[in-house]
Length: 64
Image (cartoon, rainbow, N blue to C red):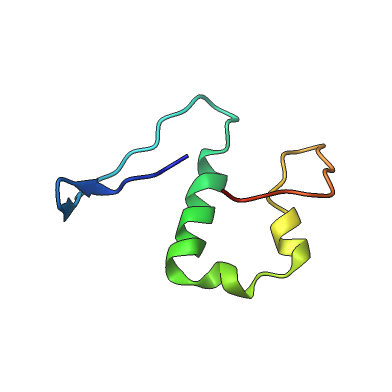
């Protein structure tokens, strides 16, 4: 998935994420925020695993 926060060549004043309840809007916003401010670089494996879906225990994951 690509997220484009631009409106033409300028940053948009408002970007909205609209999805049904339970589809990870808050998680998505937290991940975007952490990626943009560098916080995610400091996360250990347990912090990363905390973003898994409830009752999902996958041992591997990827970011594209």
